[in-house]
Amino acid sequence: MGVYCVTGGTGFIAGDFLFLLFTENLENVGFLLELNGAKERLKMFKADLTVEGSFHQAIQGVDGVFHTASPTTLIDPCIKGTQNVLSSCTNASSVRRVVLTSSCSTIRYRNDVQQVSPLNESHWSDLEYCKRYNLWYAFAKTMAEKEAWKIAEKTGLDLVAVNPSYVVGPMLAPQPTSSLQLLLAVVKGLRGEYPNMTIGFVHIEDVVAAHILAMEESKASGRLICSSSVAHWSEIIDMLRAKYPSYPFEDRCSTKEGDNNPHSMDSSKIIKLGLPPLKTLDGMFDDCIKSFQDKGFL
Image 1: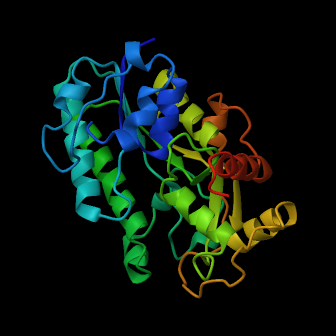
Image 2: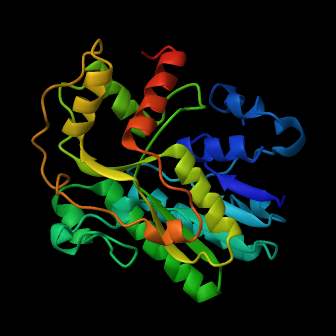
């Protein structure tokens, strides 16, 4: 096994990486220290996405880098973080490939989304569309991924981007991350409404497998969509309410526009590379609800 750097180790995706591949705030990182083999093989470094050179020490000498760290809505740190991490990668001669965690949000926000669906790796979100509907996460992720490709082209860095949709599944961390916090709030009826959002969903295990395939498969290149099924949140709630009728699900839909356009995503590129069939909506949400129950959140 090679030596890899995973940025954003306390995040939903990165935490599962570290679990599979085998600071100061122990409340957040303590669960990583308890992973099997962590004492022998896990090293943690303090780094700041906004500080140039902050990742040099963590990346020096590694074979590959999984860059999963990203602020959820902050545009400048998202872009600058990508620049800083990739700068550290080009500075380290040992790095043979970088796998960037991007998002389907860099693909699906377009005026013509219904006309061009199924969306594939050639499609990009329209930044003006994102600004018009205040879709700042999508705006930041799109800008950051485009910047990553500019850097890769300029430096010759071997870069592969994985573009997952909304990630669902069991959680390892003691507290749910932002995407799971939203789901938990919808199930418990804490928001007053559910999102007026039509979006692809994908199991965390499929996302992790996609990243490892992107790193290890020599034929992997460019962007790789990883998305199972597209559904509106109302469909997800109906599905879950039928299975878990005791929970007080939200029953009112938000009126926010811009995020509810029907579309479909094409994951055939990464499946052809060898990714097993993607898990179903039923499976990923059942795993997530069970995880909430086991940890006492439901």
